[in-house]
Image (cartoon, rainbow over all chains, first blue to last red; front, side, top):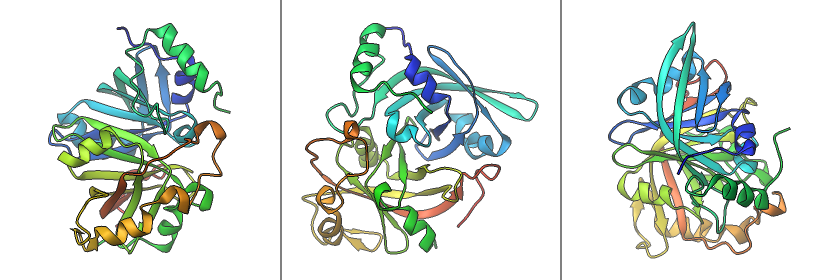
Length: 138
Length: 161
């Protein structure tokens, strides 16, 4: 199955995200990305400032997995969790953290909590999502 | 030793009571991270944060194999509540011995106080489409906070306590 973010997911991701990484033996480290450089069907590039990157640098250097949740109102309205493996490139003073997504979950409280979305065909996922939400970030 | 400030305690309450939405971040023991937003949040004493276990799945699995945990403010951001709380957590579920101890607190005092959170603080402030019709609380996640750092703009990672 090819992972394909919906347009609504992309719109919410662009508002900023919380990123959780972990050491190889499971110590979590969390940062935020206020600037999202780009979002394609299966890839997100976060533009992290030095302080935003340095808090995860040590863990990320040994383990590329990243779990992503949408920040601010997105925590309520955009009930998704995205997971994938990342790489980082430095561009000037910015650290571009590119995450190739491999998993998308619904985190809406209730019967859909934990529902995996990337295993649905793209059209089916879009229709399923449309049945729950249609709002976009303001 | 960490001591939550009164400002933090005010922020660590359910959103409709003036508190905040938080992210609960965990990891499997071999390093696969997980993150999910949580609404039912409170603090207890000076170094514990409580979250209702109503729909925890991967978070619960992770905590059963690895107690390392983070709670971070999700919403509002950039308004003075930019905190990350790090430490060790356990899901105190119904059936735990009443005198089970987690860093100085007992299972009974947690379940007596927060074991029926939905009725204690019903979610009347959230949009109807995110209100679940029949919650079934299974326990309370208790984070023993050991470190606090900032996610304030330009100060991410700075130690607060």
